[in-house]
Length: 197
Length: 129
Image (tube, rainbow over all chains, first blue to last red; front, top):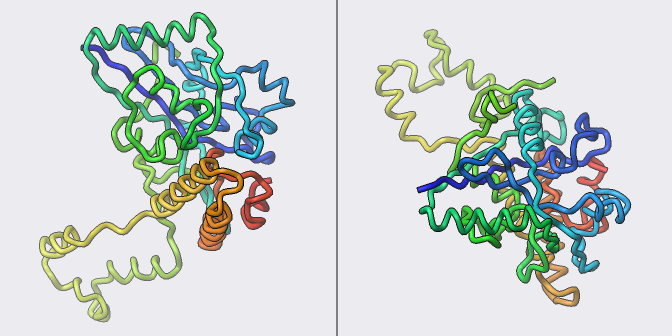
């Protein structure tokens, strides 16, 4: 048996006045990645930097992704996002607030990175690994879109299903405010091993 | 920098009323007659307390409402532009988010739980744009 892990965290947000406004867009947006036993990488699916630049920046991309009237998808691919998750874990250690009270501005929730492990037999592990690495190593471009009933693309949370990874069941699938709390409920806190920082 | 109060990230907000209630609960003076539990043995108190369902934390309360908004945003993206239910979804979304802000939710929402800015209530946009 081998272990496949899903790692995820919720967003710190895109407020222009936020002290985290200069963080990586994935930190600001929240993210989900896949980790395979015996591999340091954390594979995540997200829009390519080239596509984001062509749209004039991440804010423009997000505005279009939110709006079904634009019928919009953007090029996405699988990257090794380990550094993003390590940074998120650092921010979690620094007590980074991610939700606030509207009146007092007191923090209601803090950033945390969650890990959900599940075991698969060797055959399934190889199948998942081969598919994931094929996307990663070939740089395969796939459409990225926010979840909807008839999806036109995947987001970081639905992509693992595309390669046969059994993700925690939430309805509707892929919405981060349902998905990450499920990782929290079924999983454990994630921190990078000290010798791998 | 705000600090985290415990490792479980379950936060409840302390109000004047709750602080007074907390003081009263621990007041074992003869004048503390309003607290029915103070004269009972600790074990009994603990047993009774354990039988009372835990109050939902502020974080969990708003998370459940956030998840409801998230479902509505998903639904809005899923229906056709000319679907007769679209306006109803937007109306429900806006009403719920306004209620949340009025109750103290300052966000931000996850980006996939938001509608386009022209459909978001001003009360929320003022906090985040």
